[in-house]
Length: 327
Ligand code: SF4
Image 1: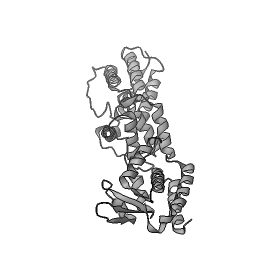
Image 2: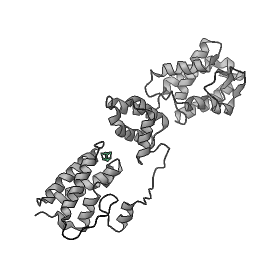
Image 3: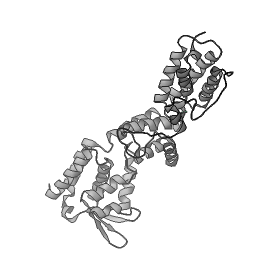
Image 4: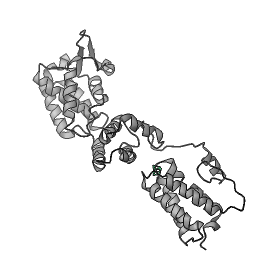
């Protein structure tokens, strides 16, 4: 193989195998080589993109519609030369990173590599057999999407949650677009959800995330005074706190949207037990059950409602455990 080609493909192969380059880049290279072999070694950019998008349908999970893999392929590996059809201006090397793909170009290998198309073809086929065009993470996302098939928008929160786990705690654009397409939800709506919930991240994050909360609930928690979510309630000693707690528990059970089980089941069970406690029918294991439910809801619910739904009951138990004693 041409020594220059070998050097460049070695870097390309290393980055594909190491996950530093999206495997869709290999797909775009394969499409280019197949087209170039049918012609005189050059392909028009619109034909390349059109053929790639048509072929991509055969590979679920392939990140073909996003520009970065194709852009990185042409800009970072010194393989290509693009010539703008309108005025013949030539683009090579890093300048290709800012190429305007809305324009049309003649795409070919650099002159030093022009005779190496058959060797490139052989390398691409071997690489494709080894890696394919879908990374293990996108393959895992496809499995999630297949499991949720048919549930549409109602499965969005759960799928985003699983997607974020697959992609090391954040949601790459290509993954968000794939989820949106699979659920037939506009991509903008998916980003609306990721912006609304603090637990979703659209940029890479560190392994440990430190939150400094300056809200009222945390400020009150420091003095052990939290009751409810960001609320201070003042009662005189004629009020039965069990009735107050029951109403708070009913409120959270009513407000839970049911997207995640800890909150859906936890708020319902909490309301059920508090109804018993408020009626003076407390059972010996009710206090323990309320504390267990509180811990699970706080630690595992996926939004602020579920995470705060048990605060009032748990804090009341800490300050006035006698309220929860069996009668
Ligand atoms: S925590 Fe509760 S309100 Fe929030 S998403 Fe889960 S079920 Fe819905």
